[in-house]
Length: 93
Image (cartoon, rainbow, N blue to C red):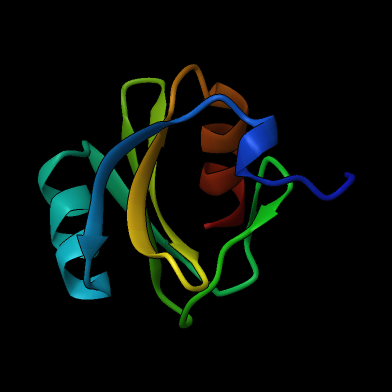
């Protein structure tokens, strides 16, 4: 898969200007299921930056995940209709 960035993927910013701990809490409180993925994990070509336990939540067919943009901080993003990524998470974890 080719490299991608947020500008190439439709997403919604759910919350920003937070810490990684606040991000994880938000994802846990707003998801049906949470996976913890390692830094470098790809979601639609975007490499996630962080430790070995980056939270990625599933809510129906939507994906909520922590996204760190250097010089801008921590965000929680939502991608709708992400069944392909949910299937990948269930297979990998």
